[in-house]
Length: 268
Ligand SMILES: Nc1nc2c(ncn2[C@@H]2O[C@H](COP(=O)(O)OP(=O)(O)OP(=O)(O)O)[C@@H](O)[C@H]2O)c(=O)[nH]1
Image (cartoon, rainbow, N blue to C red; front, side, top):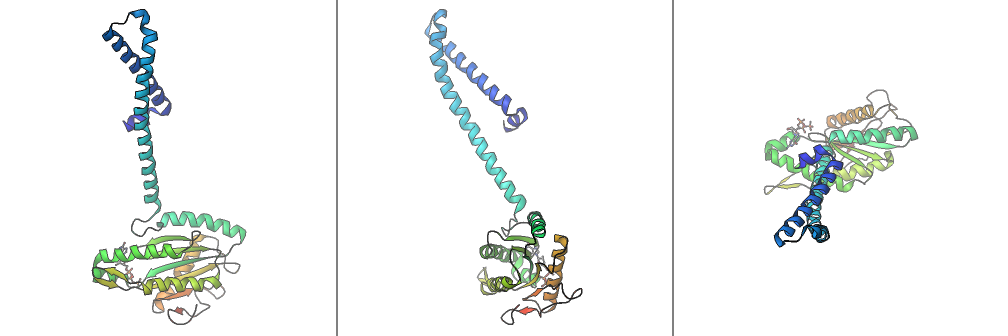
């Protein structure tokens, strides 16, 4: 039925329903006239009220079905949109959807010279989590962290799952000064809230690579900016993990303005 409606299009479906309803009502009226033996000249005046009554029954029934169909299609559409844009496991945006959103933002921010930050967060030694607690245990970690990251970000922030155990954040209008507080919170959430899994607690840590888009650092594309964050992340891993590193454009190539920040230690 649904396929037929889609194939015919709205106009022909509505026309078809109207004609069929009128036909049905007149047929019903005619049958009743026959049964009760009403003479032919009285058909129209007597049939009309009956036809109207039948129409009043048919139209609500058909509308009920069609409205139900519309609501179902609408909710399926919303479900599909959710599946297409969001990662099922963590509830954050998937990579493609994040990049679409971030690319649009990047162009606007670049044109208007707005400051913003990009962070890549990668869980440390996640392979061990899977090895020790099973893949489902690993999934539970990713699920809980996704929820917590969503909780601590603002509505205007963008958050996505960039890879297996890698998350990406874009924080509009956030410069280096405000970042320290945010990365502290990120490390804190990961460190202080172990994941309960099968009567055990799973402890994880993360390394974070950061880059700030501002007057001193304005690469031409989002990809270049992500590359900077990735380089910073690589550095954080090399520095022993469980810390944040920030990319510095003022120093040549891959050098760094700050010592990497240790969690529970120095500041960024
Ligand atoms: N449970 C689970 N594991 C995943 C998922 N996606 C990726 N992984 C696992 O994440 C692990 C990533 O391992 P590696 O890339 O070696 O990195 P790592 O062990 O975190 O080590 P470092 O990043 O160097 O600290 C692999 O074991 C993947 O199987 C997922 O959706 N669920």
